[in-house]
Image (cartoon, rainbow, N blue to C red; front, side):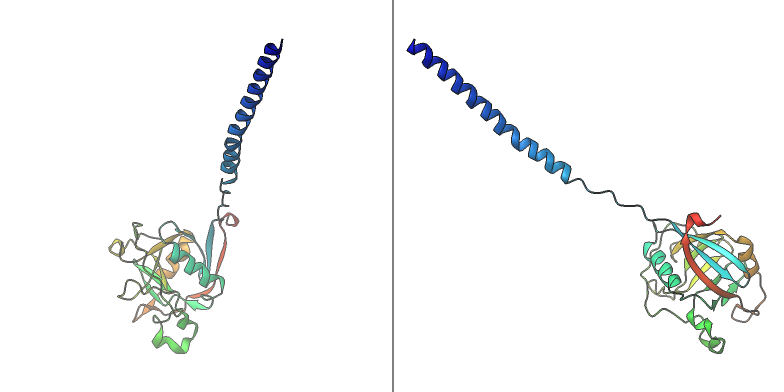
Length: 213
């Protein structure tokens, strides 16, 4: 009888030890699974697509941006536009079949015509040359002979100046207002490719793309 009781107690103790061991071994796995779930990064919200509305004395143009190939140029243009840097400037250089150029803060003052084309925001943006072709409607950044000398001056292609490819940073294109581009590009000019009649840039506003119809 004592032998039978001793055997029963040993079986019971062995069962409890096995159960405890099983519970202990399963705990780290549960914790690891919990940590794995907690480590999942939160999905980042997608930035809303924006466009620029360029209001000129000849009508309005709408430009879309290419942040995938020239993020710094896009952000620079948006930053300047949002603080009103371009408001009151003009398209100071126009060449039919080539491009229309603007963005010089010096053009706000008619008495400073001798310095038109030399204005800047006081800093430069490093070149972001890319594979986007310079064709009609493409928005690109003007610069001096130094590839990294872009600042605020930009141009919109009227023709297809493909010789500018990989030499100037293309960062957007015209999506509305081609008739306005045509008006500006075909306006009468005087020496220096300067329009006889001022082509004013009344404002450049950055707005959500879905607000444009």
